[in-house]
Image (cartoon, rainbow, N blue to C red):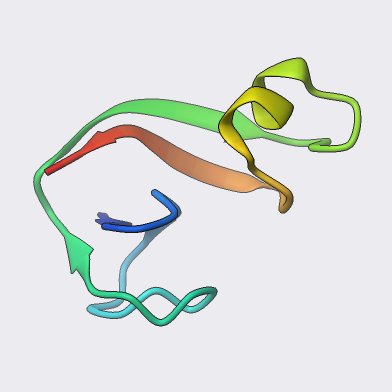
Length: 58
C-alpha cells in the first residue's frame, strides 16, 4: 500500500485516485474512516470521504 502525499488516502496506485497527487510507500499509522459525517476525527483532519488513511506520510 502507498499513501497520497497530499490527502493521505491509502491506495495501491502511483497516483492518488482522489486528488491526483503522487503517492509514497513511506507512511505510518492507519486510520479507517467509515462515516466521515459523524466522525470527530475525520472532521479534525478534514477527511470527507470514507476510506483508509495514513496518519503520517513522508
